Length: 176
Image (tube, rainbow, N blue to C red; front, top):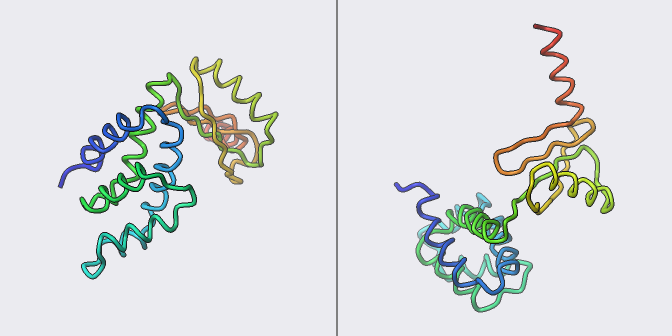
């Protein structure tokens, strides 16, 4: 069986070309569809031989909170009819990579032990943009196990200033 990345690439590239005029809106609904398609129960439902592709389409389209235009509906219908619902999360990832490459930006995830308010997030984003040398699309995820501080992931780069990381460093130094 082919790798999901190989299966997803033509879909992501076609979607990118077809939605060149409104990449942000497309990214919103494709990310939402990918999150829904990643659900194990939905995958089991879609894989059932008793379920038609129309039923799967109706279920996914009904769960999506974003209003789907004709472009989005056609894309979803094509993915489902071709049996590629399981590739939708990878399609979204590759679409986001194409979108970021065009705009010269990257996605950054800031993991924090506590909620980060808007002003603090803007300050952190500005500092991170200087540090990484590019525009960043910053999102925040809570991870209470960090105890304090933040951990930032930009692509394959990680910047960890959390209390948990510092404690781990001290543990290694003390046991060495």
